[in-house]
Image 1: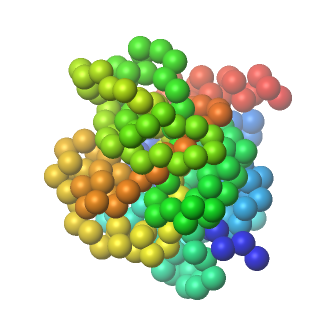
Image 2 (image 1 turned 45 degrees about the vertical axis):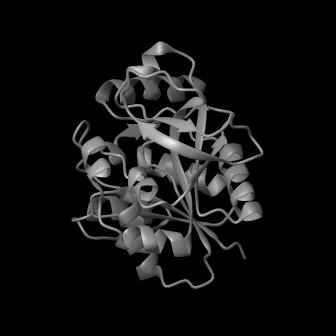
Amino acid sequence: MSNTLIIIPSRMSAKRLPGKPLLKINGKSIIIHVLNKAKDCKIGNVMAATEDKVIANEVKKNGFKAILTSKKHKSGTDRIWEAFQKLRDKKIKYIINLQGDEPLIDTNDVRNLNEIVKKNKLDISTLAIKIKSKKVLNNKNIVKVVTEKKINYKQPCKAKKFYRISNKKYKNLYQHIGIYQYKVSVLKKFFYLKRTKNEKRYRLEQLRALDNKIPINVILAKKNVVGIDTREDYIELKKILEYKT
């Protein structure tokens, strides 16, 4: 029995693209595409955490588990902790947070993340990839991360800073991929910490951890993840996935 659980937070009220979890690609909703990818990782049980009954119904209809959570959460991580509390599974030691709007997540990268986290008993870990264009640097919807050293596929490296847009030039700068793995005890601590000024100002929940001296380790991903933030993103990704089939 695996002691890693994958939870996918999802809600209908995204500001830039309301209702996106239920938008269809190849006849399946986006949230179901992500749940299927999570299942394909084969590293533990998979479930969704949502404040919306319509999403919970969609998830259950497709054979997955869903837990309803409060509508008051300001971040996906907070939602995940509530869902885990309701699950009451003491065997789980690690929780992976997969974004519900990234149906192109790479299963090998997620498996590698899980292996490194367990081997090194890391508190919080995430993924990043090399930046390939200036367009990424200037896109406020794409989060960047600065690490202490050059990152690779097998060794974790601590994050120094996360940001959206900056005029400074940083060494060891990467495009962040919003997949996190938490040690359960650290996730509990994170949940009960107050949101920091930096978290509120930059709308980056990972800054709550860094501001409270909780280290976040970064591991290099081999494949980029295309998220869906706008209708244009959805149309583009829909074309990519439907072309493949």
